[in-house]
Length: 178
Image 1 (cartoon, rainbow, N blue to C red):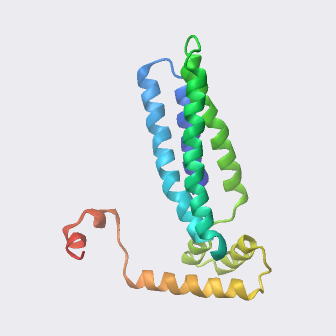
Image 2 (image 1 turned 120 degrees about the horizontal axis):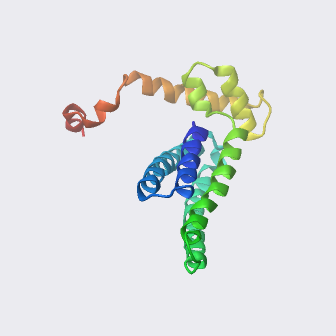
Image 3 (image 1 turned 90 degrees about the vertical axis):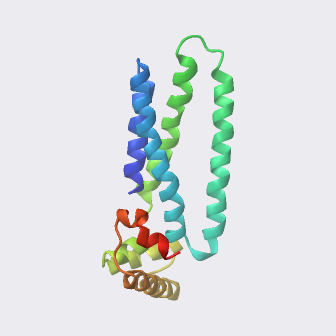
């Protein structure tokens, strides 16, 4: 899933860098923005679901540090290119985003699917392999069995609550339960 939102981001950046009208730039910005928005929700969710327990908190903090570092780098690049003549002053900073997108895409291709997602789809063998890989252990390790049991219990509890669609987010019935 992460690689799909990254592809959306990459397409948006390419549209922006290659734009010659304000409308094309705005359309590219919109597409890239939707990809970034989705990634900013999916990445911490994946880390929370897939990272070994002992690393989850640290990795989520590292994610926030990387966001702040990225903002700093963006400001530095913008400062470094603001005196360029012509459209290079804005094409270069936008184009540099492609490097980060490629880096994220490469990482998404290496990492396994979320074990929680796999278990939710009934793919227990694949989930066990993913948990073992993410914890750098063998499939027979007790950590793997414990993690599978915890995830299955959590999925069972979630499923007991019933199915909900997007409209449920906006229904008055959902608001009255809070």
